[in-house]
Image 1 (cartoon, rainbow, N blue to C red):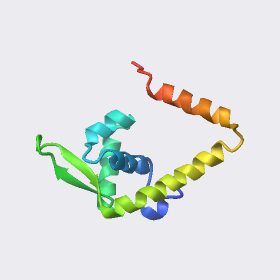
Image 2 (cartoon, rainbow, N blue to C red):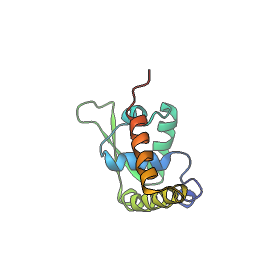
Image 3 (spheres, rainbow, N blue to C red):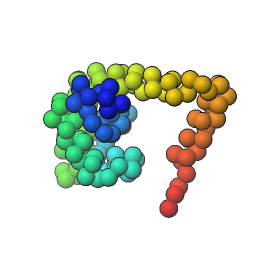
Image 4 (cartoon, one colour):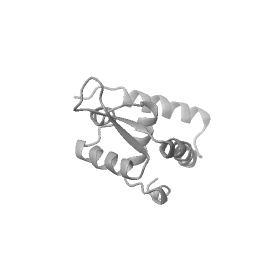
Length: 119
């Protein structure tokens, strides 16, 4: 993904952060850290870069003025289908030798992993 999105100025997990904001308009950096298990400093750097590139904007929180809520800009909205298309292409490529049954098993296992509480 890094190579495919390089022309947009993306590095690392920026595409995942952008997609999270698309699914959760008004989310905060803390919520991204909690949901995605990405280091807080990394999220801060990546969101700052996304803002500099014009893909997201910050609004001061209505209930907590110390919090910034994150929203996609028009440019960010336009990029979401591009990113999703690249992810579909990647997923198709890595599962091309899987049967339909194996794909379903993979999805179930990944979902189970995602919802397992590890302490």
